[in-house]
Each structure stands twice: as structure tokens, then as C-alpha cells.
Image (cartoon, rainbow over all chains, first blue to last red; front, top):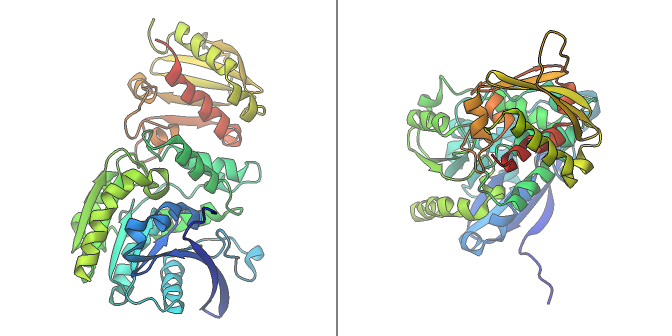
Length: 280
Length: 129
């Protein structure tokens, strides 16, 4: 009998600001909608372990989407005439438009890196439509990554982007999974990783506003000790400012918990999912 | 014999030159790099993913494309079999948030060969002291 994984991949059309986006997403399981956000310059494959995990997908409808320009989601019309720069406005509003098209009822949003940082923007503007936020490797400000070398015709973008993030992973994470994450990073379109990092390092800045978040939905911050872009100290400092938040520091893991070491990540994630389940 | 002395550098050079992966991913890695471990510095010459020469005789006439300079204590953590957080990667040490390693000079060739170059530095963890 064929060993077929439980993941189903589909395309949905998402209207946003006059554009008809063709968006690829994968899903598995049933229950509370849990929308998973990939990191900069990558795609849904980062979440393959959690999508297939019956301990997770028996209580959650796990959904991972490719943002436009990523994975199998094609860019919008006219992409060839502009420099790509992801903004907090587009990112957060597009995610909510995606959730609306799938008719998700108060989903949980879980994202890592830029997917973690966007949780602060979602908390500020869309908390009434959400159940909880799991902000992985997130903080109020993460400078230093919007670099020209990541999109330069003299440099192989795939190799440079992938190698620049390799050291964000913990040496304790299985090499097989660290290399797989490198592989994802080697495959984004020209300038996409850098364009995502415009949001990550420039357009995202909650240093003065994190304390103003209402706290009406819980935010679970989870950061690995090997993350040198968003250190545990940076996350802890942010979490102290954010009402109704919890800060979880994860040992022996880095910036890509879900794909660099799904076993270690699961130890920390399951109690968070249990809390979300209990609160309904 | 201690880490970063000339004997240690020779053993690292030999490891790189015997490494089968470096031969594959480093075929375009041809440049001269200054590596400074505190006050101890070398110019490492890469040619096609091998290191034919390591020069410890650094002076006014030394030339190199780019340099990596950090305290010996920082490098000592980097070469541990399981390096601690913030020391496991050159970008971890050099990121502006941390500033433990300075990367200077014409770094284009470094970015062009980042995969092979960092692979050779990671081999420092296998050098017998």
C-alpha cells in the first residue's frame, strides 16, 4: 500500500486591492483552524512535519499557505517592473483576506521569523477575528537583514541566501533537516528573500508600540536559543511589553524550529496548543 | 601546540585539501583571505577550493581580498565541536547585533563563494589540537 501523506494541496483565488491572487495552500486535519506562516523567501514545505503529525492535526485543521511570489503562489501582474518589498500592511491584510476566502472561524495564526513578527501587526489590527497567535522567533524589532548581497547579479542568490541563514540553526538539530531548510532557501525567486526582509528588518518596528496592544487574545512567543537574529533576550524584552503574552525559550534549537528540529519543537508546541484548545 | 598556531593552521589546511565536499562546492573559490585570531593573523590562499598556501608572515606587502578579524576567545568558541549560541557561524558572530567578528574588504568574492568558504571554516572543528 502506498505511503501517502495526509496533506492536501489546493489553490484558492484571493482578491486583494483589485488583484486576483492565485494562492497555493496545504492542509491536513480537522478542528480549530491553525494557519501556519513560512519564513522569508520560503514556502509551505517548512511545515510538513506539523501538517502530518496526528497529535496536532487530530484537533486542528492545519493550513499552510505560500505567500504570493513564494512556492507555488505566482506573483501579481506587473511584478517584473517593480522591486519587491513586503510591507506589514500587505502581509497582514493579505493573510486576513486568505482566511476570509477559506471562511476560517477565528483561526489561530502561527508563524516563524517574519511570520512571527507579523503576529504583532495582526494583534494590533485584527484580534477580533483571531483566536490566538503563536509568534515564533519574534520580537519588536529585528534589524540588520535587508542586505543588497542577497539580491545581486554577481552572487548566486540561492546559495548566498541559503548559506546566510544556515547558521541560524542549532548544531543539535539533525543535519538532514538543517540541509533541507537550506534547500528551501536556495529556491526562492530573485530578490524575494531580500524583499521579505524589508518587512522583517525595516517595516516592522514595535519598539514604541508593543505596550499599546490590547491583549484581548493570547500571544505565545517561542524563541530558540541559537537564534542570533532574534535572540531569546530580544523576545523576552518584547514579551514583557505585550499584555496577555507568554514567553517560551526553547533549548537546543534555532530560528526554524518547525523544520530544523520538529521533535524538539513539538515538546514546546504541544503545551501551547493544549492551552489554546482548552480555552476554546 | 595550541589552536591557531602555525601547526594548527597546517592541520586545518590539510583537512581542507583532503575534503571531498570542498572539491565539489569550492571549485570557484579562488581568493586570498586574512584570518585574524586576536593578534595572530594569516593570509590563506584559496585556489579552486584548495589551500596551497597559508602565510604567517603578515606585513606591509601582504595582500588579500577580505579579512575576518575576531578575538581568539571568539574563534575558540566557534571551533568547539558544539559551539555555543551566537558563536556557531561567522554571520552569527559578525551580525551588527553581536559584533564579535569583523568582516572587512572586498567581500563580493566571499558572498559568491559563501557556501564553500563557510564549509572550510566549519572544518576547523575537526582539527586535532
